[in-house]
Length: 319
Image 1 (tube, one colour):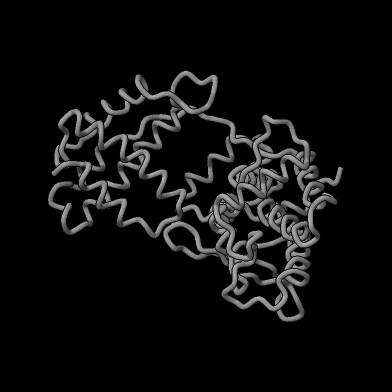
Image 2 (cartoon, rainbow, N blue to C red; image 1 turned 45 degrees about the vertical axis):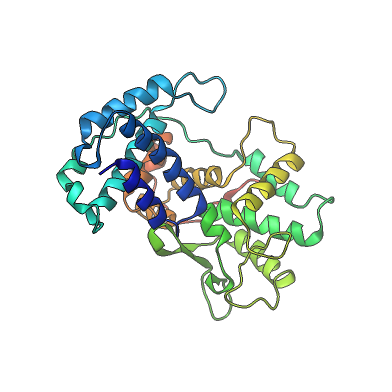
């Protein structure tokens, strides 16, 4: 069986995933499937040797989108392998394709080593500028409250963009006389549900937005609305953050995106003495191996420090 045919079936099967996830799989698997077709590699013939040959071709023929970079990064190359392995594991469980792919075949595919890259994070000054931009006088009052709540939640929880966009009213629990704690219940990757705590400053920003802008919303309604009154799309959230960056007058090289907030949350959480296993659970990681990447950016003394879990946003300096 041709790889291209099986990939088509797989992409249709994952149509329920977030748009960005689908796009990632489609782009990478399409490139690989085309390479397999050109080199006459069938689904049953896929193995570590020809996957490594494909990676060598990638390094030689594909060029990165970022200016100034001459070849694909080790992380991009390793990402192709992860997508290929995920697809092949799916094949082993699929009724039509299971006979073409053996589990040992998939396990034999090795992921190349990656260079340790420093994950970009926000400085205190940059975050203060973004919060100031949320309250810019050129913005309608409702948008000021919404954007302040969005940035507060991203800074203080590190949740993914899709988790923020699909958050519903029923999944927000704010401290009150009845509830002692504030937290969000988010639906993460693989439809895995988890609770993520909120600090006091994020709670107050979110409570004010809900009280003044979202009063009367039903439990199933989205928390954050677009300018058209519906759930935020991926592009709408991207536009909101882009406008905040412009209003904040941050330098052009400073990226503002949900994943950078996630990195900032993680490194600050650990630097403040947070526990690795707590962080792994709050981020929704399946394994602490992913979470441990953040430790490499910290000093040994910071990692050893063990304190009671405190809010990332509550520790942000105002100046």
